Amino acid sequence: MRKKVTVVGAGNVGATLVQRIAETRLADVVMVDVMEGVPQGKALDLMEAGPVLGYDSRITGMNDYDATTGSDIIVITAGLARKPGMSRDDLLAANGDIVKKVAAETGKRSPKAVMIVVTNPMDVMAFVAMKAAGFPRERVIGMGGVLDSARFRTFIALELGVSVENTHAFVLGGHGDTMVPLPRYSTVAGIPITELMKKETIDKLVDRTRNGGAEIVALLKTGSAYYAPSAATLQMVEAVLQDRKMILPCSAYLEGEYGVKGAFAGVPVKLGAKGIEQVVEIKLSADENAAFMKSVEAVRSGCAKFM
Image 1 (cartoon, helix red, strand yellow):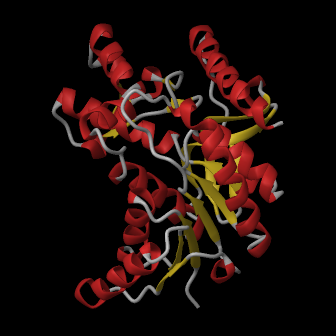
Image 2 (image 1 turned 135 degrees about the vertical axis):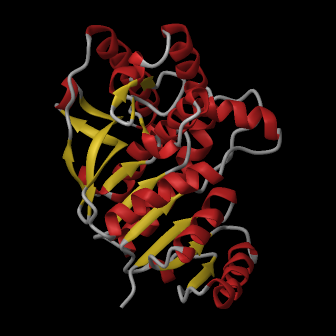
């Protein structure tokens, strides 16, 4: 029996994620959206690609939540997308209401699922989802660090003219303007980038990483990124479904780790079948820790609106 993934939101991120899950043959997928006909049409279109690409994943499009019952993973992408000039925090109130309903409806139908939150502002929305679903912290994970780290890795590879497969990077903190890329823990074939680039160059890459989403929004003008976010989410879905025990930077609800209690923040975690199986604590310098704490407080201020 194949695994089952529910993706709520049939927009660009959600639909592209469904496509990636099907093409990698990971699971059957239920795609839910409030727009009548949209999830059904996209699901049928993706099903009809199966004979050409050789996947048998069953894709179902729905406007309600009944077909999501018994899901192994719930991915929440539903919400308003960023527009030029908008910060992730500008989406707070509207998306908070959406995520609260989605998490409650899917959570009661799949009480043992792992929930991955993509909707922005992601760290705050993960908090909203955890409260609405009533899930333990291990089974509510925010997607942000994987994407931010992928962007940092991309910029490092472009700067040095090397394969992205040789680059590794960690970005901690909230998924927003206060995120904390860590050059000391970012490497090329095991060599710290601090030994390969000047500080001025690294600072430029760090700044571009922090503004990676806004850069794409400004270029697209009518939407936000979806290829990289869906790919980052796929890696998390795969880690859970296949019990990979992968160490990935994800948004986790901290209960004392890194000196933080009662807040979501991006940190390295071991991701497996049970969701977050371990929060990996790394040593931060005084400056890194100060930046991390500043990022956490920015997330806390958003969460306070939903206490």
